[in-house]
Image 1 (cartoon, rainbow, N blue to C red):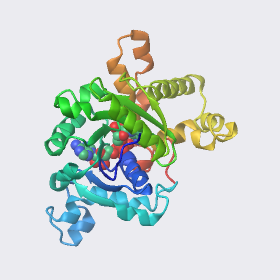
Image 2 (image 1 turned 90 degrees about the horizontal axis):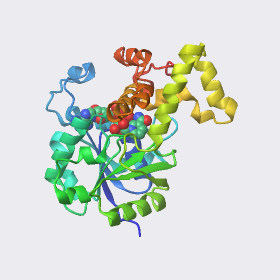
Image 3 (image 1 turned 45 degrees about the vertical axis):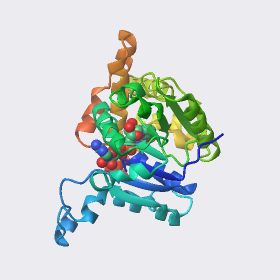
Image 4 (image 1 turned 45 degrees about the horizontal axis):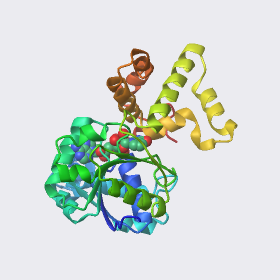
Length: 309
Ligand code: NAD
């Protein structure tokens, strides 16, 4: 059996949230896309005489993300007209739409406290029967929902999409200890039959499966590169096009993922494993920390290992 999902709310309109909303729109699901209210006016908003209370300013982040979908390559939408199925909004004025949704997906920054606080706010509007999931790359599903009520926890699980969501086949589903087994089965059916994903169920361990091994591989590659004097281009040549896998080049992928997100994901294992040897593998190298401190976040900031073209 697969769950019937017609209306979704995606919270967080960054790299992944906008891509997930687009993929849901592709299969006919009406979707609210929410983000935070921006703290400051842009020069263009100031020139137009807009105030911080103006609805266009308050929902600017999600509206901007929807507008960018048409320009993003590879295309997140099957057809640009499908963008009309996505309604942008903000968390302060529109969070009540959670009460009308079949599925709410949390896709905000990879930070346990931020995600916990958001789930607390979601629960205030949530109605039993609505599935709630997190797109976390590896933060514990149990820890994230620890302060939520028993009924909410039964409806909560991890749905880990990969980047870019339209094209990456893999989807990890991560039940928490309280997730209703029937709901997990229903979501497996829905995500494979309706969203077209290859579903793998993972245990709630740090970084689940894909990012536990993937992060390990990236950090070991980075270490070998610095120690042996390999270049970014050489590594990308052997892990990407020359291997016949043009989309899997190591540093192009890191730029796509976002270096800040990668640092959060590696830190999550570092902070949650007890084995000292394993811990050391997941210690983020200084060069990566420095890049993030300088605002070199990859494609989303225009500069990472490569300059955005
Ligand atoms: P991002 O930095 O591109 O976007 C995060 C968005 O969350 C921003 O738009 C930001 O304004 C918003 N946000 C921040 N705090 C918020 C709050 N309190 N409430 C609502 N919105 C808030 O990040 P991303 O790459 O889209 O990652 C989002 C989640 O998806 C993370 O948990 C990340 O680990 C996971 N993820 C990322 C990738 C990837 O390749 N980037 C892949 C799989 C999973």
